[in-house]
Length: 212
Image 1 (cartoon, rainbow, N blue to C red):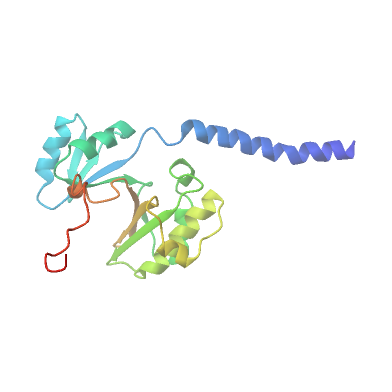
Image 2: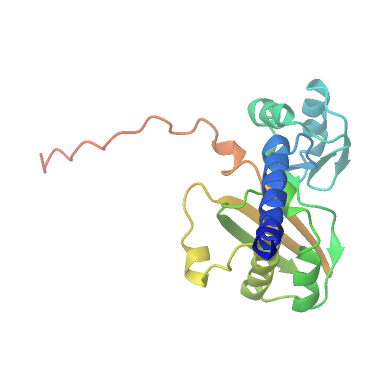
């Protein structure tokens, strides 16, 4: 009887994990995304016209436009296909938050809904920028962000070498710190959008005539 009860207690967490994984498979990736469209300074009015033509409600901001309604994956694809003045399409990972120290940064990163944004086996490629903030060391900022994300996903923290040598399928994560405010975003564009269709068909250069 004791063994049976013990077996039942041990099996309960496995069932809970299965239910959780089933829930994540059904609802991942999220159907609604907080999206910000980036453009070069001065192109905001033209970007606004293009977004209006696509039927996407937005508000113009410095350096781009914020979609007022959560975007769907289809909206993201339309932005990448039809926006001519945009340079990046960023998916916001939660709201901006204040952080004046590295422990506070890690603690608040852990509160973001990473289980709803990233897969458990994802590889990250993190780019950090900081200005006019107490958090200035980009490597330390990157390490604390990774620690917070991996803590939520239940993964072991990778080595610094693994973060430096990321593959082509790594998810580009942008961490921007300005005036002690932190904004974390996923760059869904992978490469700058002005490079779309550029040199898709390439071949080996012919040899010089004097070397042929």
